[in-house]
Image (tube, rainbow, N blue to C red; front, side, top):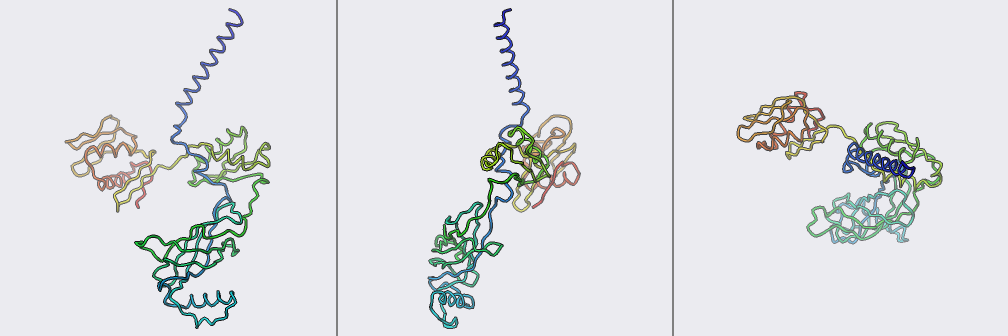
Length: 347
């Protein structure tokens, strides 16, 4: 055999080995449909919205303002005083004014000059805010600092709106100060899972380490993963987080069945299992054992495999015409018997 032929054969065996590994990986790895992006299951600590609140007045109403003027009279008098008009609050009386509370969310990395939507709600006995104008109102965060100033025309909705005392001002607030956050100089980041789970946390850390080709991520607990910034990403934290948040991770969840008795709704997790059990409900009999079978229409008897999931049980029960209410009762009794391997939550 020549060296050339030997090289071709070795190359062919190498390609075959790679194909076998690809096939095995496709069989072993969880399906991509179950995976989720890191940005959808976790957030970077410190990157969040902040709530803003303020008190203001809406003017220009068509007689639908507050009838009790304790709040509005003083507010209007104070506003006029700032505008250089001296007036006693007892001299101010109008049903075209309403006292309101403003709420808004300050997005992360907000910068001065950006605009945000605001929600406006009456706090007095005003009957409608339609057609009103919100006067300049400062919005404060929990630290009592002013982060935005709101003003604009009210948008209550159509004439059939059932809540005319609440409305919005789209882009009605202008951010007045930057939300300070220097990401470029940070040496470590912390990811927090939306649904804490030890398995998901461990998978997330492992997936990040695989992508970064090193031991940079550590699962601290069920809801926290710490990431040390690699040397190659120093000063480029935004690029690091962008690459991490786009990674696919398969989140794990607890086996759980949620039942809403009022609506007859049943939501079942795919990891819920049922132990060997026999069920009798009215003229219905279902056995869960080692024998394979399926629900049989007519004699109202069904047989399904031991260790099956609740989805298979529900499918079998549906074949013999079990109503949602009966299904809820059956699931509750299976849980009471200790045969439902999962959590049953009743809403």
